[in-house]
Image (cartoon, rainbow, N blue to C red; front, side):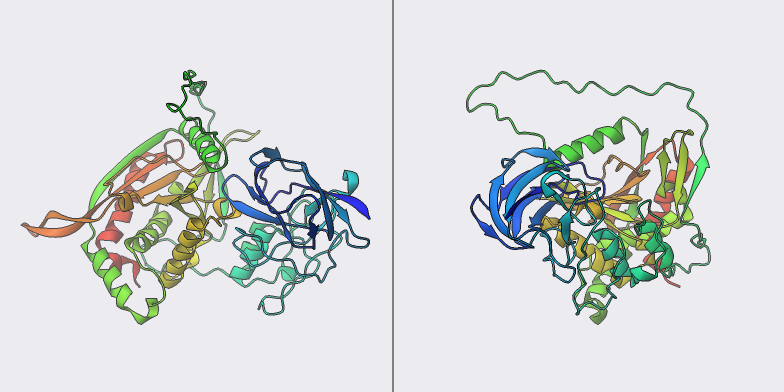
Length: 463
């Protein structure tokens, strides 16, 4: 038998490190291909890593609770002869937290010491020598020989795209997210005559003049040490979700000039619509809430003020504004593991039922701790529902890579003037924070007003 080394793979798209949470094996344990070796925590996901080898565990190289970089050797296995990698037809069990029913196969990385292995599609090393075949029960074709990461394969399945028919544009010949989206047939759910159509170009850039004022320096972030006393002070290591959240929030707060606006809204008709949808047989198996109407309202309003869906991009040639002609709608989710912001890809293409289903799946996945890094990347605008905590309004921090975040406050009955009379109505507050480098006050106000108009009269969404 030969000793094989398994290195920490990149289980997301560009992640650089992960924490070893729980070893599922110990030295001396016999393992088969696809047996779970270890549970790791990336920036925001728990993932179970399967074994690429059949053999006996020699040594676990990293202790639990330690964070290591991608590519670090984490376990060695005395592999049985001819068992260094699964065959092309060998099924690979789904990883916990992958959000998909499949995981990539694993193969030794070219040039790695001791036959180090990475997950195909996750690593950055040599070419794959084996590739799993999709289970027969899946309706999408196997796309044998196509190079694509698992999140891209999942997107292709969701859009009904055969990867074998997609022209790859990646540097290594891999199919990218943009390749899949461009190949998929796109149909707008918006047919309001006063609302412009989605442009055929999904993204464009606008030149930005160089800044004339110096950037505001970030604080040094060094806190005064506390005097430690047994039982009085508890030290909590900053890692995992908290580390990712703190880094992202500091980056956003000290790089994007935030401006916030808000308005009170009579959401009585939204509540009436939610009640009707809950009673509808078409929505019998789908959770319906005011957040669904809010999501549709944000998507609709984005089409009328596309700059709230743009992003400021600093590059070697100077700053640019990237205008996205699609909506990857982020939903801030408070989970037992911390704040997550997964997003619904191409939300503008979903009808009301499909959007309700996507919101329900997103919420359940987040609560179960199965949200993947890919699910949280590529967002274009975010909704945070602070109303579930009884809050009326807030000034949320923009998610990095975006220019706008909208907060929905609690909906409660209040006295409201209707046709000159004071009546009890369901009232909420819609607030939002925006990157003032990208969008000005008139655009911000128009966008929030559009969102409010839908909550006041959801019929505006209809033909």
